[in-house]
Length: 196
Image 1: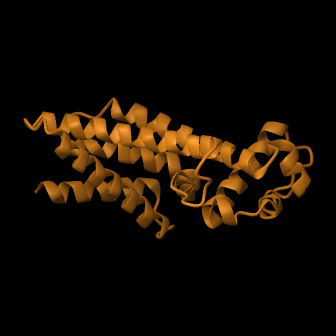
Image 2 (image 1 turned 30 degrees about the vertical axis):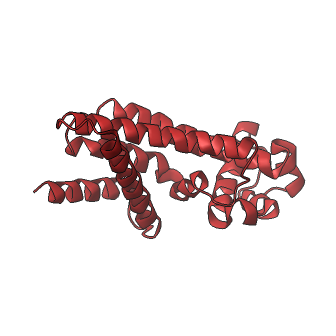
């Protein structure tokens, strides 16, 4: 139990959000329990509603926390990427670092149980679209540097890259003993093996 007596409001909200991210990642939007979020945060369920209004409000705060932080790191990492395969490690390193404090947060971005319409769907779609746009830009630049201007090839490479990233994060989630630094090093080794 975290407890909240004497805890500043901003810190308390952060504790509740961390508990909520863990619960939404574990159970999905549909299966998540506001009572369990309150229990994990060491507060009452009414206090969760007082802070966030509703389950939708709570999920939106969590989604923005996860998606906003991750995309800010990825945007910055993309500035260091050049046309080499080896430089693709920069976005992977940024992603692992962003997720390190609560790696299961990745699941919120791809939760199939979220509403299909409304604010949650809009925000989730926006973050997924931005992830795809970043991957698409990198794929197109990489292929253009090799004389390939095919839009279909760039689209296919984007799908491959996004699938690879999701697979790596999924593997990481299944291996909690692996640190972000270890995952980055593993990806560097794998990219090196592919290149030789």
